Each structure stands twice: as C-alpha cells, then as structure tokens.
Length: 228
Image (cartoon, rainbow, N blue to C red; front, side, top):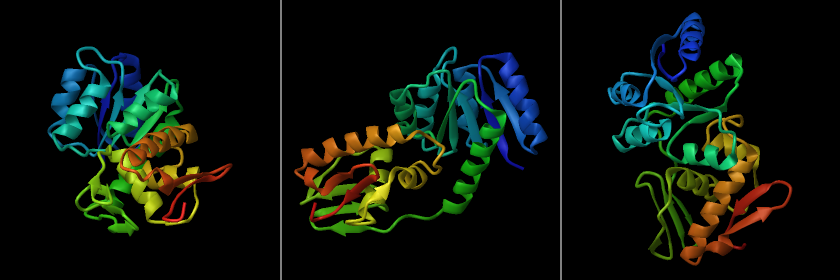
C-alpha cells in the first residue's frame, strides 16, 4: 500500500483527494499548510507527495526545495493554478517529478502518481553509464559534467537532459522521448518545457566552449554530437 502525503490549503480539495486516493488503495495523510507539509515530508515516510504550490506559511516551491536539500527524494507531484511554462520549469528544476494544472482530472492525477511510484521502484539503486564524447564527459555516478576539463554547473534536470542526449551521440532525440527520459513521463510536462531546458543547457555548454555540440533538429528534437 502506497503512503501518500496530500498538501493543499483548500479543505474541499484535501477531502476529495483523501477519499479518492483511499479508494484507490492508498494510505493518505493530508495537511493544509507549508510548515506542516515540510515537517511531514522530512520524515521520509511517504512514497509520494501531492503538493500544492500556493500554501500559507511556506510555498510548495520552498517545501520541495527544503526536501531536496535535506536529501529526501520522495517523488513529488506539484499542483498549481499557474499554467505558465516557466512555472512548470521552475517546479521541475527544483526536483518535482510531475506538474498538474488546476482544475485537473482525478484520473490523470492517479495515473501520474502510479507512474511516479513505478518509476521509483524501477530505478532504485540504478545509475546511468558514464559518457565520453570528444572533450565532453558526463558522469552520472559523480553527478558531474565537463568539457575539455572545464566543469559545468548544471541543475539536476539540465544534467539529466545532457546525459540523455550524450548517451545517444549524433542521434536526434524527439521531445516526447526526452520528456520520458528526463521527466519520467511524456505527460509530466509540456514539450515547450523541453525547449526551455534545452535553452538553459545550451547556455551552460556555450560557457565552456561546447555550444557547438548541441543542435536543434527542426520539427523533431535535439542531438548532441562531436561533429555538430
């Protein structure tokens, strides 16, 4: 039985999610403010967290940020009335595993939660392979990336994106495939969020003289290769 923490400042939403997820066979704990959410989440005793962004006391963004800083890797599904691409990108970059915009379908929420739980079960204890492409080195075990010996400061999502592309050198990778590889689910975020992160990654590569490695394949996706 999955144990889920539901965080929302609207009592009606908490009640509805509590009843619905319980009916799905999950054990549910619900709280209505950021401080209570953080205290509960930091115990590490939950299998997933459904976290609203707008909360009294401490925003969902800050709750998530503190969780990840404390080493709590519980999957988090952010829920928000904000539907902007930058809002989604910010939340995902802080370490969220998914993002839903209100009003949302309960069926979609349950599907995302179950997908997050499956991914966590499938990836526990696994790391990707170290990739060397010319002067580019991407090492998942060390969580490091460098070009010609110059280290790059990458966010977790930027690092995952670079590794996904570099692991398929000189091969165009579609946006939907990148959503699956980097965000864990093609429905976890929009294709435009991929574009936002490619822009972030391109600037980081340019800063160490490696901007030429990343190329846009118009109408399809992106590739990283020594000959680009």
